[in-house]
Image 1 (cartoon, rainbow, N blue to C red):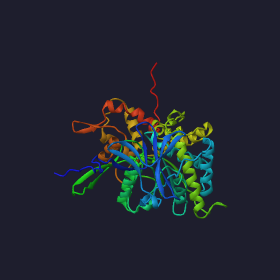
Image 2: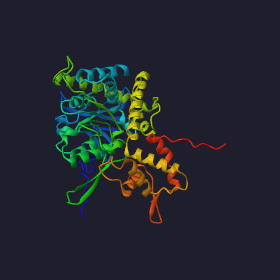
Image 3: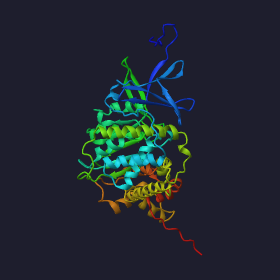
Length: 444
């Protein structure tokens, strides 16, 4: 039987396990954040809270475990696949920090004012995202030459522990990078050209917006045994795509901007040079101090979400929580409200909405109407039979009822139908998909 033996020091006692770490919340509430000095080529931890912090070469969790920073010779550090702060740096107040972030973004990438403000506060959010259980994504969409890559490089360089996926030749390293660094994924969908790679990317995006949903992958151990492993992929993400995601739920997690492209704005640098990198490092240093000061109190801020649907409030509420300026919070809330209305409009034009309209009319015909899946299909065909590439069948209609609308047709005497308990769920679905329902008139 194989057994692992912990290494022993010269005195005979067991040496603690060395755990390479980029960031940790310590048992006493302090934060340990790895920093990298590019001049001295040195890594270490900043440990503390608020303005009470200091440097540590390592952090002992127990006699058996010791956190150590990644080596400065690590390829990921050396080749800037992941970016770090070099030291905490004073920024004054939050308004000054926000202004500095926004000026930096404006200097290097051309965005409309509304999305520029969203991107600015998203940068701030990435530095305290792990105080929450849900995160939204920011996505830019456009074709070749539209400015997507410039956006990712500019905004991504300010985010906390940005992981630039373009440096990975395949998707496989991304799971390990996210699990090891717990940072912000900077992802250009165009870097992954094959369908199987893109499906793996979608797994990361689908599982990565809520805490507690790791991606399971089967790997082969040194003993040639299959060894399932859970990879932590939770965290903020900047994404560039050419089109829409097929998954509507994934679309609803993304604040999206369609990039205009065209010539660079007058005065905007053509290349991102050493000045760009120095400015980005200085802002990351200031944002590190912001994290030390505000990680533990960010949840106490007021969250205003207007009339957003509960799901959008859950996803985007954390972003609003980092906005100290009431007027900025109001503007971004208004942007989210427009996004909310666009999602409702899209739902109202979907096959699910058309199917619900059919169900609504069949239900309205009276209690004597037996609401079977076959009858729903017949009515749907009569209205929309030539609008879809595939012909509507009871099986297809039943799958939409079950998988997309959450209704459960039951089998009775050989046919599937909606029970009174399922029909009772329809009112909530009508409201969600914008299906108007006439109120029943009560006879005098």
